[in-house]
Length: 389
Ligand code: PMP
Image (cartoon, rainbow, N blue to C red; front, side):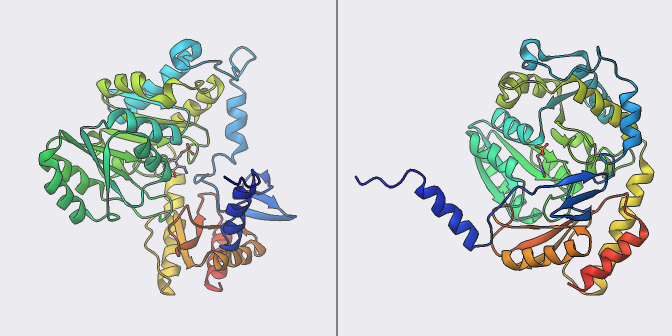
């Protein structure tokens, strides 16, 4: 067999991505609170998940730093939770989460990607059929690919389609697991959690898994997510939230039953085979969480700003199916999305194009991540420039 140059196939892949306008590069940025500077231009950051502005809040950081001493600033756990990496603060955070959600147990993981790629293979065995929304996040899809369960995708938020699948397959399966996000990361629309919970009750042997990554901290009176807002926390068997977004930290969690947690501790590979989160990071998460539950003003502000942008888009009849602070502006071609993002950047808004494989081919878009610390003037200026696109 004739061998080609070892790296030739890699180069060909990169050339193809470049030709499609889908080549990714890591942006060089400097950060200063709500702003980033890229290529000499200082812009408002509308591409991060710092939805409440907490990661940009230096007062909060100062207050936390005031609680630390060289003894309590523990930058590494130095091992897995199952060896010597479990510190009291890990247990404390989990107890606080279980208490807030009114559930038996919680488990903290290194990040949301670990949560989704670890929980699904652990709980969905070969006797389980998984029914997942067509638009769930890559980490959930990877979790399904890693496991032994058969999985099918139902049309996005189409509960008739889901029910037809349940009707057809549930009677022949030991159990069924429905998987969805609450606020969808790329479209900003929401799953009807109340209806999903009702469906679960109609089909015994059905479990419900909800990823609240983009709603945790933002929805519900205490910011626990859409499940709190819709009063369905007890119906959700696996409620996943992440700390790297509104909570301005890192890591993730799942709230669930005691038995489920014990199974995860024994079977969830990204929990078992990785170094536990550093205690100082977990302490920061707990510090933020205890304040987050009382941040109704910031949550309301984000909702008000989001409404303003939605109304402006509706007035111009720009397609907008989002109902949240994540607002995609559909463009279509990747190269066009790159040009339009560049135009907004020139006006001082750091907005990025989202392209395949993150979104389906032909649906490249700009993704606006609104933040609660935008001023009225900044929001008005953003709306004006969106209208000029
Ligand atoms: N779930 C969803 C819906 C996400 O959007 C993301 C990341 N953007 C994750 C999980 C992964 O979370 P993490 O960044 O903590 O790995």
